[in-house]
Image (cartoon, rainbow over all chains, first blue to last red; front, side, top):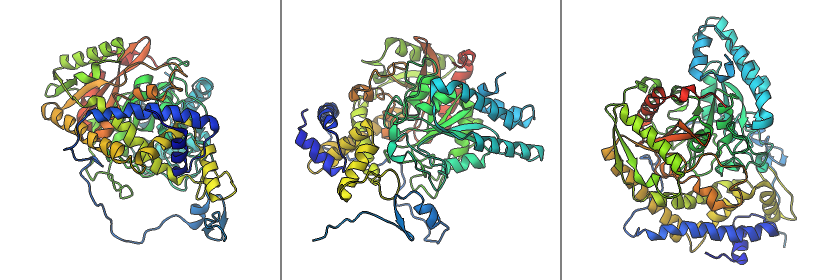
Length: 97
Length: 483
């Protein structure tokens, strides 16, 4: 299966994944090979087969809505790149007009 | 007697009889780590001082005459995707190189409560994606049997540590074979429990419908001991099964004459090293000699398990790894705006295999392709499961090889992703179906270990351990010295 560099760039944008020029070329070839391999699935007729999203007989697990002790604010923020007061500081998302 | 070469149950007996101290045991293992690490490189982080303190605390409790929990004083290693409070948990990735979790994974809490001494965090393929531990962002790990070869992956550090005497036991995780493959390559016992048997709270997520935590040990008794400690329901993991936890050691009776063992013909076909196939067939004949009824069976959809897995796992991975964006924790590489910051952080933070999986997963989940790939794979998953359901109407256990070959040379498959993926062809099947799988060393081929793999229906860990134990006790593997 062939994948174009445009497709590689489109997927990388969807994944928010920067790629070097060498990685783009390599991924074009490798994605083609991997997708070619998994297309073996098309040998099977699955028109009447239901999908399995999960494999255990457990559904809709709930717990009582009780207040429980959790992590302190300091512990939660300890790994953040930037903080301000009790918040994680993030880069601006909306550009100024 | 080198204390570092004891099994968990042997060391536990000596500790309880006060013939050795926990500090002596931990020091022996730390000395072995010091001696072997320059070659093996099984660890990313060794927590020697904490380990010494934990061992001393156990000795104090022993001296006070306390009745000690099951793993008291036993030095155990943890794969570096299991969260450890205050101890670096990197997933062998640059993006988490300095991440110190604020809490312990449930399995870590349970090991600590059982008295285990935590030695440190073991090497792995980045985010558990790989079959050789070569995709660690830090360094590869060498196979203790032949340092020019891989230990298997992704829990290669855990398997190598146990084989080299650098830990008495270790925990790994298994999404497509990541406990069982390195167990086979390193000549140790590896158990992937039923999906949901062990809580995954605090396991860094890879393929959430497939991931499971399990033990790597030197014998089957130890696997039973460790599983008894880590298994069980956890309110913090909504996929954990509310089934009671037996004392798995009670299952090790040595008797298997009441069992029916199936041999799926699809696991012995094209692509397997004939000497590996013959070694596994010899092991299965011995299971027959022990009284089990052995017969062939066909699981016709087996060849489709690997392509289904390599759609489902990357799709789930691409969603799970979206959280690594340089904002809440982990590496950040600043760009001109937030979008460039995301792109650059992930470009620098992730290695080649993780990028491949994110790209494959994003592609198969993207508009227009979802039905052709992801939904198709989920349907094939149903067919794989139905194959197993039918087989388990006739058989209690299936016996198969773990991998088509013995451990391969470092570098042999790094540049060819499909060849690397084919390493997992015999292990992904049970992840796809949520079943348990146990690997027990059965032979040396080309001077390297081969593991017999036993598969069973959901919740059949006791049966698998019973067969594994009977097989182990009947053979001569015990006489094979640690490498």
